[in-house]
Length: 312
Image (cartoon, rainbow, N blue to C red; front, side, top):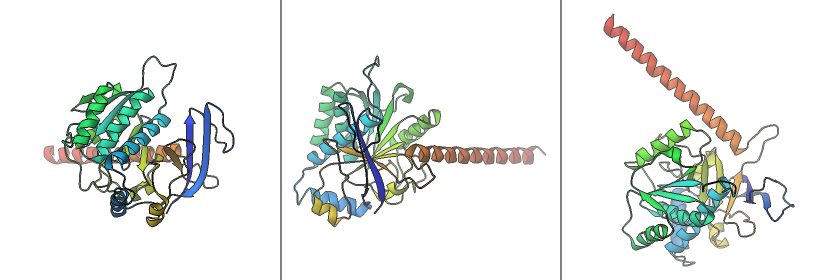
């Protein structure tokens, strides 16, 4: 289990008080052992949810997608003063993780966003066909190729979930590369991964060495093992886990306040050290940039030695 501090903010408030709230802002902070799920337990938990309590896949996907949409709202709330709506690009895979993204897009439209979905490998299952139609009915646009990231305010990575294994293949390999390129061009650009960053091993993280690290993660039901070392902003969503199942799998839902479907996780702050997600993610970006410079220098050095060998 992992001891974390959980924070939920409703509206656009910035207060961190656990007791004060107004009509426009409320903030809640507490410490709780959420626990972590490995790949086997995450799968088994889903199976049990759909058998013993009798949840349908459609129910769970709707609840998950709503949680994702709320997390996006907390990361990038629309402004009533803005001349246009925030534009969100959602990259959806062919499986259930992609379905969560389709549901999220529909909710985001009603939350005040303009959504475009890249969905190159569409599922032929009827529920997914219905989700596509529901998105189209509220004005969501679908594209097959990765568009210009500069035209969007945030990207939702809803490609692969906790069942993913191996290395990413096309067209999603290129999509991951494009998202990293967007981060490189604008480090503060919000990229929000659903449940597990796409391309990551659910237990061990980025073992395929894709280099992809989103700025925000929304863990569904409970954080997965790979989230232990995640350096960015982290939410937990999925307010439906029966207490008996939570106890069986050694996890615990955060104390969601009011009607909120998500809660933000922040690690406890060691004395004298800034352990906020901003500090951790900034440190990660700095380390990544230094590593890229070292690699570029090594390539340049190798090229210079090769040139000297050929012409001397």
